[in-house]
Amino acid sequence: MIVRAVAVMGGIEVHSRKTPAEEKALRAKKRAERSELLASRARAVTNRRSTGAELPPPRDEPTAAIPRPSAQRAAGLGIVRVAESVAAQWSSISSTAAPEGTVTVVFSEIDGFSALVDQLGEHEAVEVLRRHNEIADDLTRRHGGWRIAAEDEAMLVAFGGASRAMRFAKDLQRDLSRVEEMAAPVQLRMALHTGEADGATSSDFLDRVVLRGAALGCEAAAGEILVSSLLRDLAPATEFHFAKSRGITLHRGEPDEASVEVASLEWR
Image (tube, rainbow, N blue to C red; front, top):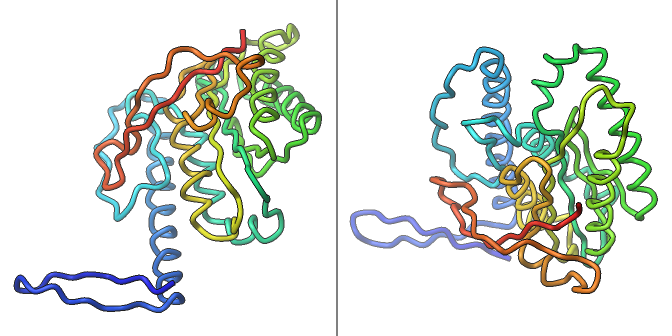
């Protein structure tokens, strides 16, 4: 599809047309710039967490499809790293494992993992992470999903059905809360979003479903499974129960700021 760009010069609108190849190259350039910018900010957040230093305000970006962690508590930093990784490798990921039909993505992150490392030491913290990964991988297989990406304490898993994804999320929270041999209790922040994957090799599915799910993940509280309103509406009422819906703002202060409705999936 030919996309029309509009520029205003001297009060006169000048219309130009870009070829599909030019538009694709432009989107790829913007994603690369955004990924590099957020990668540098992620490193800055990591360096400042140990000292408690206040984070500087974010710089302006051309777009803000990849979410930001909370500047106050660095929540969602792992999810941001996963989102960056997926965005950077999307062409390869979508060509080798392109989903079909309705696909639900699940973002998950161990809450306060850096503090856990400080508390337990690196060796014990790695053992906690290893046990978490064992449980997550077993549940992923059991519920018919597949892991898309993982970065330390965070991961992205996809399912070919909303109910499968929600069962996975509930079981993962429950199983981790019941593990007695862990050196410290683990809480997850999780978020689920869903969408049609027809033509998933395009950046549209990445932006509309995957990165939106990551943005929701950065808003989830510790121990919470946050789902989009679309996913809540797809859930069988006899099996899944939700807390009262609430509105949140994604990408606050950015060009693509959006108010969305979400709900917490009950799992306890």
